[in-house]
Length: 189
Image (cartoon, rainbow, N blue to C red; front, side, top):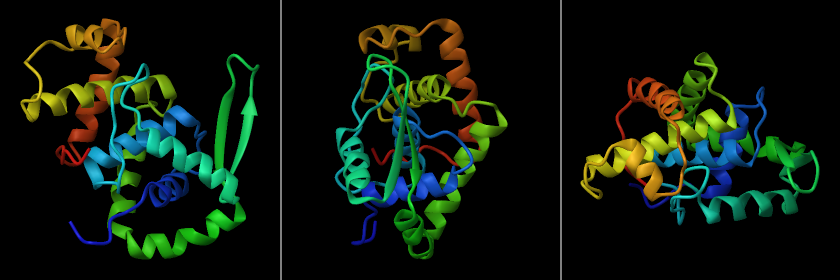
């Protein structure tokens, strides 16, 4: 790994640039950030931990909030106070950073584009389906690293309070297997 590691802020900008034609809410950004950390590269100071919707990083969430405050992201909130949905897009200032970041991290950008293209191709660019795939990826990564006994996915989901049904696990496995065809797990997270 080079001394110049990519930051959470830079990852968010590149993910939004690569997926600009799609709705990007908090869950989508978290799961794409997780896939970045597993398949693309380490993200400076970002760690993912099990959360209700799958792997979650407080640092990534903080970066999103900071970028809204800096004026690099626009946010639109839909729904009611209990079930609000946030949709993020790059502001003009945020779009102004994309060219330099693509020049600096072009290979990384190309790899996250491939992940996003697989998600779109399989009609999985939705929060719940990305969450299922992230959960399957998390479990598979633990298995590869021998960090967890070889439990089946359903038992693991109960341990992590993920409440996955068999059909949800199956949909997650489908996307996980498709992404795996692009590149193996690099286990940066």
